[in-house]
Image (cartoon, rainbow, N blue to C red; front, side):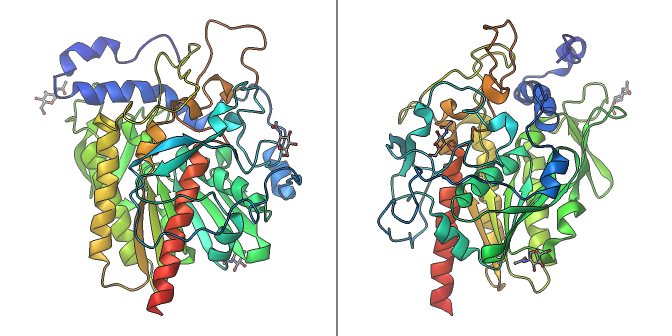
Length: 436
Ligand SMILES: *[C@@H]1O[C@H](CO)[C@@H](O)[C@H](O)[C@H]1NC(C)=O
Ligand SMILES: *[C@@H]1O[C@H](CO)[C@@H](O)[C@H](O)[C@H]1NC(C)=O
Ligand SMILES: *[C@@H]1O[C@H](CO)[C@@H](O)[C@H](O)[C@H]1NC(C)=O
């Protein structure tokens, strides 16, 4: 980021007490616009995009990784919804189902082991919910449940992070073939798992609703809160299951419209619009999105899962060593979900509950929150930090080093999100087999 802070001169008269928190949230993520969109390619990734388009993903066999079939006794799926918000991280000897060598789909910036992260302790924990058991991810069960379905991730780079975890988790049993890739940074991609006739897609849509990302011409994101983003909505009747994951992009400076009427902005001191923050905007974006899915799916049945807000863990400046230096999870009670993290999660959970109520009498629609906020905030140790780039300290510790304390290492804590995703899908399956 350039040394000049674009807000510095205009700040003092603009910030009232009420607006200060919003402004603070806006400043940290500003630098991340670059990270989200243009991860600086210090080293060319081994496989170019073209290469990926022409060749299916190659995954080397991994005889010493525990086979999911034998790793665990069959545990009974949870029939009652479990509150995954309550729980703690406990040590786990087994470790991850994959690594950067056995799975080739890991995005460069999240491939921590391959980038030289020396400590491995962060891989040996599992989330223990208070009310239920959370079994290890079973790829075979997942593939069975998703058979003949199209699973779609819609959102920002956290959606991508979760998707890439999922592809690695299933790849120990079935190889996903990349069949479509489009857009800068592979923002729109589709894989096919021929053995089970499963398609998995990702659609870039950091606001879910229509809008545009900031550009050289206009330094603000622009959101049209009354209509959904066509880039995914146009394909909706081909979706069977959607995972929506957004949040961090709402913290960035933006202007907001509803039915062509200017509502106001977030952090736009040079525009003289009313500051309205981003909480109501975030809620409205979900309201519009979940309604659009309810109304727009035609005769198609759709399951919708909303992954809740995943907190960042910056402790210092993002471009200094030690921005997220922890090597272990927080202990139970050591860290609570509060302030902005709590508010973002609450909005998502409430909007999902509202959508459930509104669609209760409609066949073929199911909504669920994938409540990862608490288990994620407890994992300050799970981010790439400086290992977003390969071997950041090869020439000694430098004055400046980029840190990613937002996304998650693969393998890493985000694999747990997909363990819970599998539990949700399993519970739905049990319920629908009862009904029919
Ligand atoms: C990845 O897993 C494979 C198979 O278990 C193992 O041989 C390899 O050493 C692992 N690589 C790393 C970097 O841990
Ligand atoms: C997956 O995609 C292929 C190619 O577009 C299509 O022929 C097939 O019907 C799709 N299957 C599912 C389950 O969506
Ligand atoms: C900013 O908006 C206020 C209220 O609408 C208006 O009175 C004022 O003239 C505007 N200032 C500028 C510089 O446009």
